[in-house]
Length: 82
Image 1 (cartoon, rainbow, N blue to C red):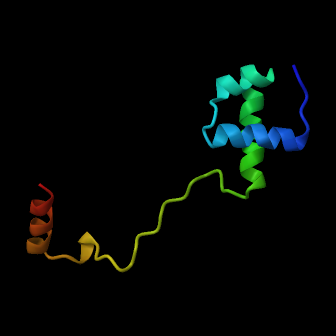
Image 2 (tube, helix red, strand yellow; image 1 turned 90 degrees about the vertical axis):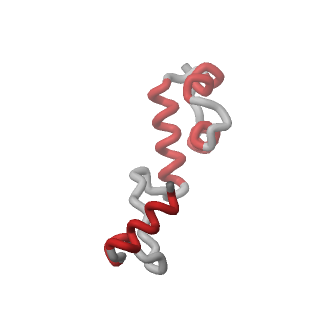
């Protein structure tokens, strides 16, 4: 088991987060556990101030939603998709 400085842990987390390497490969390369790899990724996410819980994307207000369409308009839109 190896000990890494904070900057090194962030680098490992960044490599895993960006999918440059996967968790199991990082664990074997750096001689750490998968739990350590997960912690390093979490530390990296915190360091870039990315919210770890993804929020829903807001609906664009310029596009008309289905709620505002009439029955005939909805049928036309659905038929175009088929």
